[in-house]
Length: 274
Image (tube, rainbow, N blue to C red; front, side, top):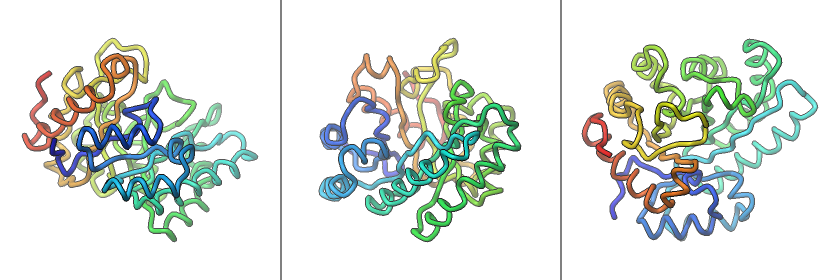
């Protein structure tokens, strides 16, 4: 199949696959733009993985290095920085469009103190990223996931990104219900480096229980339409995870998602039909 040039598929969407299994899946479906997982890259070997990416003719839109820092424990920051330095090296090696990060946990400090600590923890990492010409994008997360971030709204992510002079990864699954989201998307365009797409069913009580776009209740058409009207021209990264995806199977869920997101982009924001 031919995949829309603005769509990429995250390795998170095939969570239990190895890197090599991902390569085989992407080839079988005809996917040529992907988002890579730092954990999978490190497990497979970054240099070897880069060779496989090049041989497969893949364009890498992003590398995801979720987890971040333990902001309440400064003694852990060296390890967190070392991991992100590995991520920067991986981005350079696979020619990734950006590095997606989360802040890490902040409890029990205030949001403001956590923001200051995150900026301090990231300072040498950002210096390395700029020297390597790697764009860093901060992802906001579901409020359930205080273990990986203290930034749970797109508006807060944009505020912090502007303060730190970095980009933002828009996670539609975590921001779709925010107040005045269309305006936030429009004003945030200068910082938006990537948009992650999946769906959610109202009543779901687990953060990692996503659906194929069009199978749930997120007004994805309105969000994509708002992004398009505001001038967003970047990638839409399909990032699926959870029991519904595992039950359906990666190939089927990803293939249906590709068709749904293509309809969203080319239709100017009409919601996909399940």
